[in-house]
Length: 153
Image (cartoon, rainbow, N blue to C red):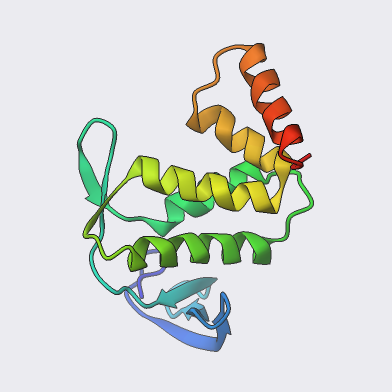
C-alpha cells in the first residue's frame, strides 16, 4: 500500500479489525519510508458498478463520495461516525444488490435522502437543499414544513 504522505511503496500492517458491521476490515498501517501511520479499509466488491450522471457521463461507483456528502450534511450534528459509516455501508449494499451494472445519480441521491431522513432531520434538509438545488428561502421553508408534517422534526 502506497503511503499517502511520502508515496513510499511499502507499509506494515500494525493492527487489523472488523469494521462497519463486519462488512469491511480496518487496517492501521505504518509507512516503512517516513514512519507515518494511516488507516485503510478493505471491502468486498461484488461487481464493477458505473454511476450515470445527469449529463449521461459514466464513472465508477465511489463510496467515498457518498461518505463525504453524508459527513458534510451531518457536520456539527450529534451523529457519530459509526452511524454515518453504517448508513454509507447500507447505501453501498443497496446499490450492489440492485443487480445492475449502472445506477443513476438520482437513484443514489434518493437512497441517501431516505437514509438521512431516518438519521437526522437537519442533515436531511441540508442534503436536500443541495441535492434538490434550493434557490430561495421559501424552498427551505416548504421542504422543512413537509418534513415536520411527516414527523421528522
